[in-house]
Amino acid sequence: MRTTVLPMEMLTGKQITDAELADWRKLGQGLHARYTVGGFGAGAQFVAAVAEAGEAVGHAPRVTIGDGHVDLKLISDDAVYRDDKGNEHIVEWVTQRDVDLARRITDIAAAQGAAADPASITTIELALDTAKAATVAPVWAALLTGTTDAHGRGTIGDDVRDATGRVPILWFQDTDEHETPRQRFHIDVWVAPEVADQRIAAAVAAGGVIVDDSEAPSFTVIADQDGNKACVCTTPPG
Image 1 (tube, rainbow, N blue to C red):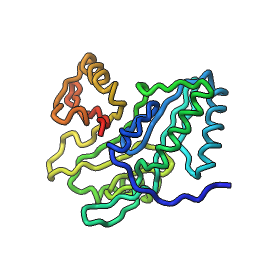
Image 2: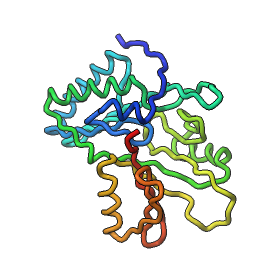
Image 3: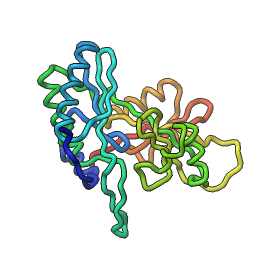
């Protein structure tokens, strides 16, 4: 029988860091892990055990199985966020429920011989510079997911977040009105903290240029030879 769960407080960055989840990294809004396994069959067996653990607590990760690896994401779609005025909002974020299940999955992985590979974790978000986020967001929600339901789902902003995870999150960076052409889309490449420098170095070695590292290690702006920019993002210890 599936357990009924209630909304929980979103955790701070420090609370997530203090949890010391060796196998997991917080990228964007959720906890991510990759485990290497002996093959697709071994991966399916691992996921079956994870599913049983998730069912027991009424929570489940998002799972991708490959030939030799299993990718997992833990996030609560009913996390409670309180703004400066004390108003409650339900958002997508990490809660204690995710931390507890992450620990359980780590135990399952150890029992089955699945090795964590946090350095291989990457997740992508898309960002669009615009002065009209509320106006253009429904268009992008419909283009990316087929309906406008994803507009603002799980956030207090105008992000486009598909409930089924088919497409990356699209968020909108507020900017002044401007004439085109100029780059308005950029990619946020989320990686584990311990590989951020390596990822930046690899991009530079391939011909990229560091445009702005004033907010490092949170994010570093990289440009290609044509001036197109992307951000290498990470969640530093809280």
